[in-house]
Length: 166
Image (cartoon, one colour):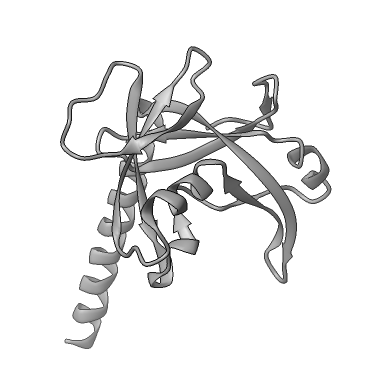
């Protein structure tokens, strides 16, 4: 009986993990690609390797609009230009989006608006490549229609990719 329980738990875990991977691959393949302006700072995680911390230009504006007492999560409308660069337009209500607009979800961590999160905030890099990644000025994200963002790569100010883009 114990072996059966272990086997069932393993099957459930593997099915769930496979579903998550498939969902992310679907987002990478079909999500709308938008470039979010960023600034970076390097860091190290013991036992993990080098990473670069990413801060998105829309975060300060979002904190300003939400106020410091904001809680929970929501969606922001981004205006996307011809270069695919997304900038803060407004908070999303139920209005219809223009063709050059997309939504991105935000989540307030730890119940304080100073910790607004819109996408992945760390990018792990190969040993010795952090200097090149420091040149990143845009994070490329794949967005689902409901605003989920998946970080797929980094780009320089001239929009050229740094490393491989997923």
